[in-house]
Length: 352
Ligand code: SF4
Image 1 (cartoon, rainbow, N blue to C red):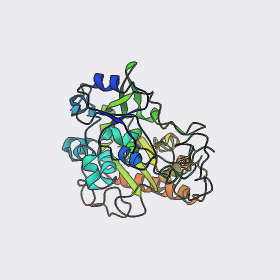
Image 2 (cartoon, protein in one colour; image 1 turned 180 degrees about the vertical axis):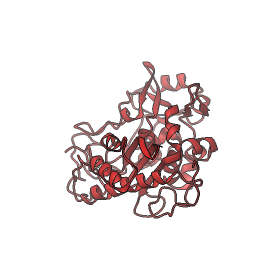
Image 3 (spheres, rainbow, N blue to C red; image 1 turned 180 degrees about the horizontal axis):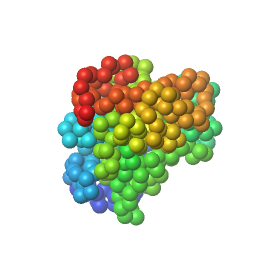
Image 4 (cartoon, helix red, strand yellow; image 1 turned 90 degrees about the vertical axis):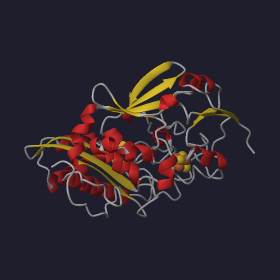
């Protein structure tokens, strides 16, 4: 039995002060953290419960026409928000493809950003894992690694980030608002997660005691609503993490791609923005040849980290497929299997 303190502060300022004690962890829904504690993977000395803080709630339009989402908003609550779905359909599709209905009802958007890798060796305290125990080694390198990273990995760690939600958010230049002992700051979401390098124990650039308070989508992100999809390949059609996934968002003008946003999931320790693919697509006609060139560019730096070379070609195909679906137009209704490449596109387009 691990003993820990449990505190339920009334404000963000109180929460940040409470979490200044070394060994503290913020608790929201706990859909990942409590599993890690029960499994003996993490041992926080103090849990600071932020799940009821009024300041972390709300889905609000910003003065500039963007959207601000409080960190304790539940995944399902956000995905059900009609205005959000209409303006940011690829993000809604990603949210609804994650986990199970029960988990989406509980899990918060802030927690989604900060969930840990699903590498099985990380969850097994009997295995060597540099992320859990720096310097211990990495049993995944010579073990079961077919689902591990093909981009941005290091000799220290080949784990992937498991979030679906983060993938279109990174593509759409989402911003993360952070409150901490040194005050408030904000970061592009693309700068929040770290590649492993020689310090895989640090998933993000958050300093000790810093709390994610909100996520913002800029107004420009809604400009992709007519052609925005998220496609997720998984080993079963629900309640599974991505083998590979892709968000594709296009602005199409006069039959050509005026601007493209592309990001991948399941390939690296962070949601992977594919700017080289976006450059290939800018100004191109939205056809299969352009999508294949973009997919090649997106995976140009990819390298197997074990027995996972198949993921590179799979990721190329998922990028090309996501682009083709996005070019065809955002469907009026989400498919019955959100983000599944096996789901036929439902009839009708949300924006013709
Ligand atoms: Fe740990 Fe990373 Fe190796 Fe998995 S891949 S065992 S998380 S160091």
